[in-house]
Image (tube, rainbow, N blue to C red):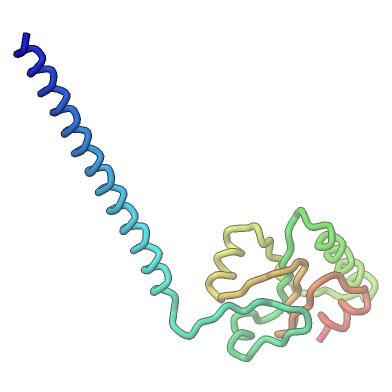
Length: 154
């Protein structure tokens, strides 16, 4: 009987040791995964070119000559779910009709992958929509028909 008890105690002791080994292995794996994730974060930060800062587009802002090279012409940033954007686009069309002219505008949906890639490439942050870049100047919000004409006919 003592042998049976001794065997059971020994089996329980082995189970405890196996649990401790498995627990310490789990912690080791968690630490390795944490180090890998932290390394990816550091690499992502390091890969960003030194001296490059994001440009947060604000109403009335003039782009620098260097930034203006990246945005020749007219760019209109919008979202399909934005009612102000929809209204602004209609007003732009009305302005074209009223003044019998055509504005050359590149419409960029801020939810579109290609637009996001463009914004990341040139380090541009569109914080409000609608946003229009015309002749290297930033215009945020809806404008009147005559305002769009004076902005876009230059």
